[in-house]
Length: 342
Image (cartoon, rainbow, N blue to C red; front, side, top):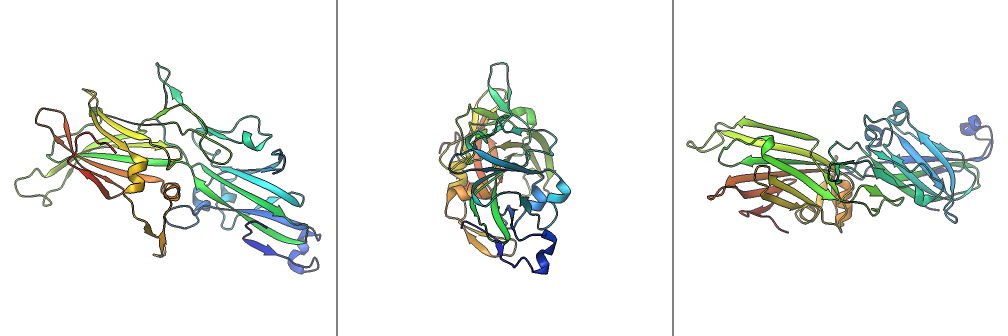
């Protein structure tokens, strides 16, 4: 039998199960989201809807669909989804987070009778040149799957479906080392990747290139008096951009390009996946300060859903920008390079 988190075989005369009124087996699914950097189950706080599709693994045909959209039920500790199924072999596919959001940015096909039809597509807009773009904050989207055998013996069986979050947020901050003011209209920021369509197994389907653009821009200045040398400027000027993107894959090379909006000059071209997986630790502490080792780059990308990039700029002598330093999630990547290459 494949993963079962709890299995209790009791006599039908046991008073614990008298409320069930029979000696039939009873099946439940427990959803767990601990594929994160805390190694802690955050299902009840982050998942606000569940759609579970059950298929015959031999034919690929759908057997039944279960759903739960009541957020008060899903946020209750120990939530279990009851399964009204006959004993047998099944393939479970779960998409979570499609409902109960301000903007419905993901959807499944209208026809879902076979397992390969349960794929998820991110909505996108098109500019006047026909190029696809996404400039909204993507809500949490989760995926999970399980092959399970439901036995014909009396008892209560609980099957665990582990979830992966498929949405990421990238925060980019630019700071000028010489104190020059930076404003949001000075830069264009975008990441191009064709990852807006996910298969029933959570791999990427063929998709058009999508320009992910910031859903939030901010500029400002911060007084850092006493933190710098006596003759240095005591104001730190900054520009910030936040963008969302779908699942990042270790074998792909999406780029975040930052250009000077007035000249079109490329300031940075950041290979976010290559740098995030190269310049990272392999050891991480969970909420209980227990150390976990992550060897696989895809596991790291699936656990890490927030990427913070800090860039430090200076001026070139002949105009334009000189990149001084870059950090990704606090890891220093490169220094004193103008056009960044991997």
